[in-house]
Image (cartoon, rainbow, N blue to C red; front, side):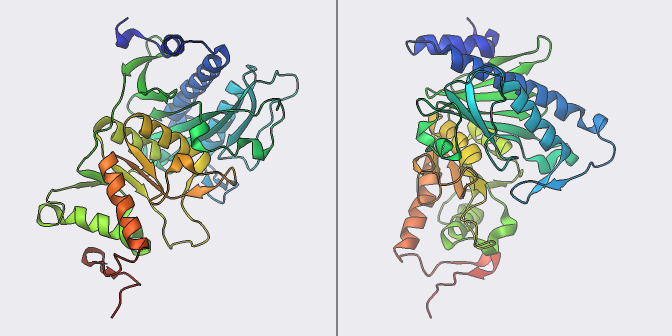
Length: 358
């Protein structure tokens, strides 16, 4: 079957057959997630028509601005996935505690964690937003999961992916054997395979970071960015482009298409937070996708997928993308931690390491 004619549902079935078996529950769950993403795509596209004025915003459970469409997307995901009998619990960015499967619905063997609308700060300016999700196995015998049952490392993920709501809507998924992209064909109402076996080139001359936080970065990050900005005249001997969309889905999608590096590193802006992005439903699913596409994902010091979670809303630093670039930044952190990089200064940002000796 030509890959452009394979629908998402057919692809999932064929992929499971190639792996030597078929998990009907997982296939059904992924189809429910797909349905939710189509409904969210429709809601995003209609947002200017359905909203009078900017809409009321309220803080979510993590103290961040929650827009009406955040709440709508969250409800869509819950309602689309709770009834099918594949899940016994869900965790969402927009909810402080795990969501129970309503009484009267059967319980299943899987857990779903998700960010219903990543990049929602871009809604008002009509830029790309998305949904991120991760599927885990529930512990054997558990039908009413507690928070502890969700605290599994990224290596335990069964599947992960994201939906992207841009000029076209896409769904990008991994089941642990590669990364595949599907585009929503609105004529037939189905996601069809358009980007099979997505691969990230090992090196690239493009990086994404919020440069307004430069004064808060650790020296290894300032060193990396400064060397890139120096271009051909600097130690890298090549010119780099810098990007920043403020939507993790859009940043990772660009990397899957053409390579590069995405950084939301540890900084000193808020010392109470070791990082900015959530491990369970942002960093872990994206790290799984990136690694399956041949890239790498790290905090700068640790492989993201190897972190043992301690909280469902735990935050971590994130550095992911082309393997060579991630490894370079990891090496810079290691050198700095060994005390071998204490004299670095970044004239571009008019900032010196606090650890520079006299």
